[in-house]
Picture 1 (cartoon, rainbow, N blue to C red):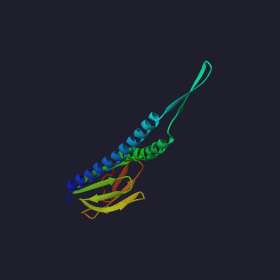
Picture 2 (cartoon, rainbow, N blue to C red):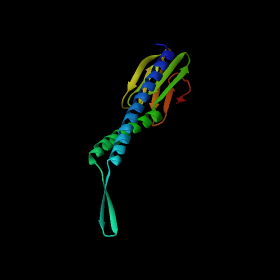
Picture 3 (cartoon, rainbow, N blue to C red):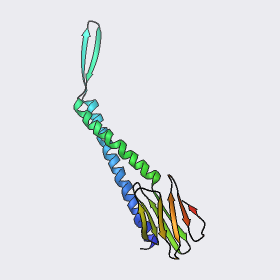
Length: 160
């Protein structure tokens, strides 16, 4: 596969992930808003009085609290996943000699592509390795926010 086709495919994948995560956030936020409004509209006011002193007591239908709880417990993790996705997901393509190196760093998986072909992937770990067309090796060292690409053929290292 061509590296440009690969980039377009990965960008579409990123877009689909973010749209899905956003829709999940919106659904849980709507559940939260609807049940909160229903809860507060279900209030009934009772007045008790002892002569000139009056006291108002508001009673709410507590069955709506389950909907509020589902909305909150669904919205907060979905929002955290969406924010984490926007912060940590990376797609970088670098040209070295005549090879195109693409690094896709998602929430769970990290993939290394050389000239549009997947050469290495990890779920948990810090290093990826692949061979270039000239026989030299590249090593990708992952950090929290960055990645360091080093080459065995003497090409200067690249930080992405």
